[in-house]
Structure formats: C-alpha cells, structure tokens
Image (cartoon, rainbow, N blue to C red):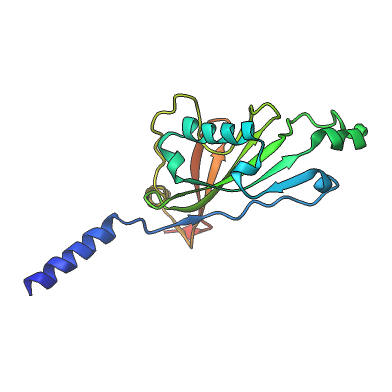
Length: 195
C-alpha cells in the first residue's frame, strides 16, 4: 500500500511540473510570384555557400545563447537577385525594405516553456550580414528568459478576473517583436459578458 501511495505522489509531482499547453506554429510558406524562377530551395545547411553556412552556424550559436541547442535547420532559400533585377529593372528601388540573398528556416522546440514548434527565419545579404532574425538575438548573448505558456495563460486569467468578464475558449500565439527584440505570448479570448 505504501509503495502505491509513493508512486501516486511521484506521478502527481511530475505532472505538476509538466507543461500543459504546447505551442505549434504553422509552417512558413511563401506566395508564388514571378520571382520563383530566381529562388533556389536548399534542404541542407551545407548546401549554402561555405561562407554563408559557417556564418549561419556562428550566428545561431553566438547570438541565441543557451537556446541554440534547441534549434534545428529545416530548409533554406538562395535568391538570385542580380539576375532578377537584370530581367526586371523597372522593379529596382520600388521597395524600401532590404531583400535578403539567403533565407534559412530553423525550428525551435522547448517543452519546458510549452513550445513544441516555433519556426524562425534568418535572412542574410550577400556578405552574410543580418537582414532579419525572428528570434531574440544579440552579441554576447546572456541567458534570455521566456515566460512559459502555462504562466502566460495564468497571467491572462488573472487579468480577466480583475476585469470581471467571463470568457469562452482562448487562443494563443507566439509573436516575435522586431522593435523590442523579444518573443511575446499573445493570448486572445472572445468576450462573452460580465460576471
């Protein structure tokens, strides 16, 4: 009887520390356009030019700190911008945003904070400089703390109690804020009425 009681207590204690919710993002896809003929899909990191694959490896390890070992390369793209703009010179300088020469996709997973799958992208120019990086990053990266999804939902629950509204089911989304260089949980709840 005593062994059964201990086993039940261990199961409850394991369950109490386990993350209940898991976030799984959609696979990022691109819309088809006339640029498709100038895009080469890359399925392995070492299929990029050596300087770019080494740069990507360096950036992941150097700029994401302890999170780098939870990231896996999934796919990439090489954009032949020179040929594209030679064939479509009227489109040159029509857009004020930078267009990367290389785009790599990684999947970040961390069950401790409730992330089953978060797809991030790194865009580099032809010299290997960052155009975009959809994950908190910096040089000399110190440990960045991400609130767990369970804690984010509990926090949003506490706010709904303060406002005294009743809510139906909720949705959640992990969003990278480019201005703050931060990952944020967005918890949405349709409003039903007052308590």
